Structures are given as C-alpha cells and as structure tokens.
Length: 231
Image (cartoon, rainbow, N blue to C red; front, top):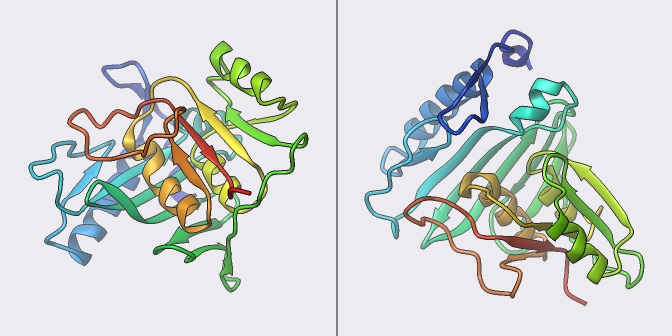
C-alpha cells in the first residue's frame, strides 16, 4: 500500500488500458524476487517480458496489479497475481489483496489456503451450489449482454460485481458459485486464481466445458466459466 499511496499518475498503454507507477514498481519487485528465487524459471509479466521461447517448460506468470481501474477508483478491488505454469497448466497460485491484507495461495489439489494479515492460514474449499440460490460474480467493468443471458439461462438473480481476480478467490473460498466471462482477458488475469480454485475443488473451463490451457502464443484467454465444487 506504500506504493499505492504515491503512485496515482495514470498513463495509457498501446491498447488504451490504464497503467500506473504502482504497476511498474510492483512488477520490478516481483520479477526480481522470482528471478532470484528460481533463476532457471523465466518470468512472464503483464508489465514486462511477454515472450515464451519454450511454452512447454515451467514459467512464472505475473500480473503485478490486477484491477488497475479499481486501484485508480480507490475501491480496494485490486490484487497481485502470481502463478507457476507447468505443462501449460497452472499448478501453484498466489493472490494478494493489499486493501484487505488478505492472501490466497495454493500448491496442488486440496492445498488451497487463505490468510488474513498475520493470522494462521485456513483451508479453502469451494462449495457445492444450491439450485435456485446461485451467487454469481461478474466483472465490474464488463457485465455485458452475453453474461446477462448466460446468467438468466441458469436462473441466477443474485449477481455481485467486482474487479480483479478476487472473483475467482471468492468462489474458491465458498463465498460464491459461478463467474462467467465473455470477452477479452489475458492469461495473467486468470492463472493464479485458476490454480487456487482448482486446489479448492472448483473448476475453470471454456463455456462448453473444454480444459483451459496456458502458454498460448498471444497469451489471450478464450471465454470461460469458473464454478465451485461439482455436486
């Protein structure tokens, strides 16, 4: 949050998405730390190197500030996302929400946790949805007609909008049931949350149920649906 307090100058990337000094400062800290921790594993980051020379080899995938719009708005719905990709699958994930000092992390099936501040970590477990009482999450910036149609088809009336990868984390924590996303996202937006959600018993697939893979040449995601535990 010290970075946040002094980093509100907003610039625009080539695609016109916002970027702040906090994005680049966090990126430098994370990339340096990961490179020192695992010098043989490359780091791919939204604000840094985006080139994969060997996609089938392990690599770190980083979004140093997910939810830049929320960061600028000051609503607290922004996160730091770090994932380890192995064989095109996210196997480890860490997501930190600075505004609430809440961390989510995972290291494999059944090994998903959350931690508030200095408290002891607690296990995460995605819940089995109750028919007729689904809690859906949607992007604060992208609640479009396709998303509304999907939710109507699933008879969802309780829709909560928020930014960043927090949506995937809340499904992993059993606080929500489904998050559909139709529209452009990048692999660093989902990888850490995907790893955590899978470890907590949930899933993230394409809308027709196909597996979600990483290390694509352009690092772009297809449409997806994240869900809690299967009944």
